[in-house]
Image (tube, rainbow, N blue to C red; front, top):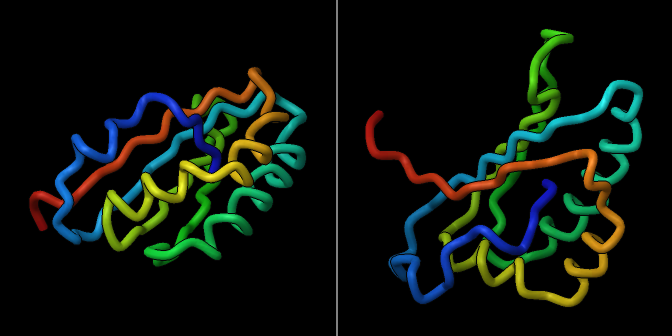
Length: 115
């Protein structure tokens, strides 16, 4: 669960209704740096697991060695507001301070519109 703190709508812009959301975060990993990326993911996962509204996560690894996104994290939250609140802590900012620029990631909040 690797996140940048910008790029998300403000908490005021997100509907406050308690609707489960999914955060999908595709991550580019340079060749030879998978273990480093997994170590970073573990730090984020440890932080998020302790947050109110966190429901679970699954980290996926592409089976295609030429895939743009080597890892894709899929996390479930009780609400967008719970996720946005978790992004505001100083603890999370400290975890993100050492994140390598060479591992771009593109997190976004999703909700199911069809089943």
